[in-house]
Image (cartoon, rainbow, N blue to C red):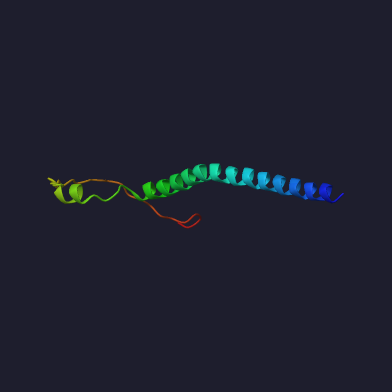
Length: 88
């Protein structure tokens, strides 16, 4: 009887170790996908702020602008009568 009890405890220990190994293996496999998901979220948030700063392109860009100002006159011959209803 004593050997049977020891064998039963050994079997429980092995089953527990195998179950623990399966759970750890599953978590390690999921870590890759979790890491990709987090990195994708961070990149998405960073991209929403705009383009990344680059000293090479930021300091070597030359821009120029030519602006021509024109004058327009709008002529209108409209008259508006603001009378309240009932008052003349």
